[in-house]
Image 1 (cartoon, rainbow, N blue to C red):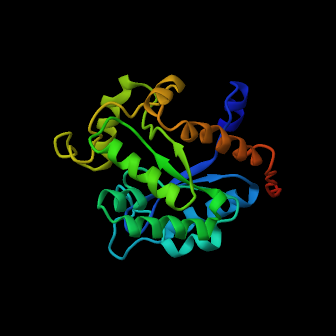
Image 2 (cartoon, helix red, strand yellow):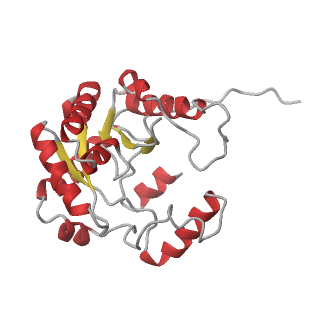
Length: 236
């Protein structure tokens, strides 16, 4: 049990998922209550059932969540606006700031302003700093909170080559053939607190909000909030 293992090592387990929407953009949903866990499970089920006609169920990203499913399943969830593939970041990168504000306000309407955080990520990729500055401004315009996240895909830098191999396998191609899908550098490891403080020193509130969100996620514990009772089967 991963939750138990985390507790035994003094780590708080936070339950959540990065979901891919119909337009291939990403959102991160974190569970803050038992109701949030139920809603996340429903959303993931909807995503896996929503496979386009003719689409390979075992393709790299077969599960696509309809945007229309979010409002009815928002209770108990904290929404982070996603990585550079999130809709908000895409609109910012496209210089469509009015649409970016409208997108963020829609999330706030669905989930409640207190449950929406604008994600800031810095993985030393060209365009990161410009995107962060604009996201901070959009957040200020919409009275939204910001949060710094690492977008980690492996726990140590040394694991980057293995991650590249896994991407190629998932794409069913060679290393050369998966070049566009692989990460542009090796800065996608689990960052230390010191590294995050250095990268986001201009945005201390974004760092403080990581702890704030973690505290809110204490409202759900996988081990104690659900007591599954399996049926008794008659023995032969």
